Image (tube, rainbow, N blue to C red):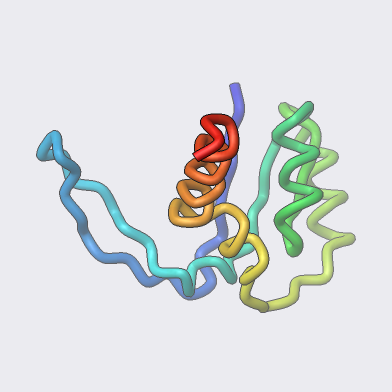
Length: 106
């Protein structure tokens, strides 16, 4: 199983309701300052290391590796604007629409 934990250094959440009526927390971009701690491997590990600075990635089910990484990590507080610009819902929708237009040659 993949478990990803986010340390909330300055959580700002507000309730939102999905179209199916279930409540979900909508997180403010201020949460992009949070540190990610993830016990993952493979693509998830590569993605976090490449795109989410100020994160700790350790081997799944290896608490010794987690402790080592926690001791080695120098925590910094900063905003991940580049991640938001590349992976926000709006950015992904724009890229998808551009891809569809290019494919359809519109």
